Amino acid sequence: MSAAAVILETCRGVKPAGCPHGAPLPADALATLAHLAETAPVPEALAELARPMRRHEQFRLAVSACPNGCVRPQVADLGLVATRSVAVDATACVGCNVCAETCPDAAITLRHGQAVIDADACLGCGLCARVCPVRAIAAGPVGFQAFLGGRLGRRPRLGIAVGNMLTPEAACTLAERATAAHARHMRPGLRFGDILCPDGRPGLPAWVLS
Ligand code: SF4
Ligand code: SF4
Ligand code: SF4
Image (cartoon, rainbow, N blue to C red):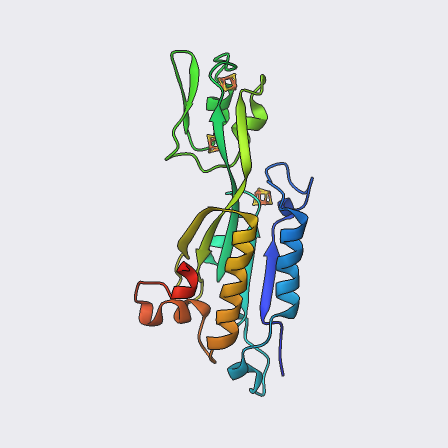
């Protein structure tokens, strides 16, 4: 007996006009992830059992189109979070302070009448670029933060951050490698995070890092 080996959960913002906060995914990246979820094989050690895969044995791939993380990517087996780098054009900024008042993370201050973004505090949501009345803030292309091995349940754990500003292609490659590792190594009763870090030990397998 079997159940889907990979569950793809996407927030509504991954599609154009799905959510005002979202940075939509390129259609081909979305199609790649959907294909991965549809075709992922049930791990051999689980396919032989006289029961469907349990929920925690399935691989949950969660994709959020902004750092609000509505599909809980930080506690997924693989979570992808779309972000955008932002930059202020000092020659265009008129010092109105709208961006600083809007930023949810207090990452913008006005210095000498110019908006300045604190890169360490910025989460890359792109909101400031949308509200600037003179379009003085440019948002770069969508990149992905990636989290591996997160979980809820009896021993909850946030996923390990394994990438920042990954291109959509690199994010899809990581998803292919992670689901392939799930198919190869998953055993009854385990969670993907147990495979990634046996006994909770830190360190990541080579397929993540290559
Ligand atoms: S994660 Fe962001 S883009 Fe996705 S539904 Fe939530 S608020 Fe909208
Ligand atoms: S991208 Fe988001 S977090 Fe970063 S400065 Fe703009 S509004 Fe703030
Ligand atoms: S909203 Fe635009 S014009 Fe106003 S302070 Fe921010 S960057 Fe400058």
